[in-house]
Image (cartoon, rainbow, N blue to C red; front, side, top):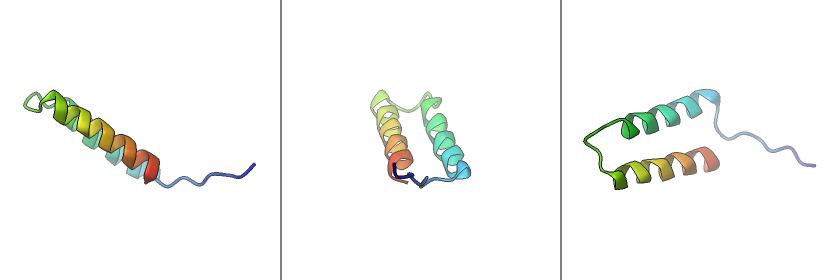
Length: 48
């Protein structure tokens, strides 16, 4: 079984999640902007 290397360090993950949390808790953002932020965070975590 091949070992998969992590593309994101812990600090990268913290920054990605902090950015997403900021958008999610911002009441001025629309639902579509929040969904886009979720998709962006997901892709950044998966693809580094």
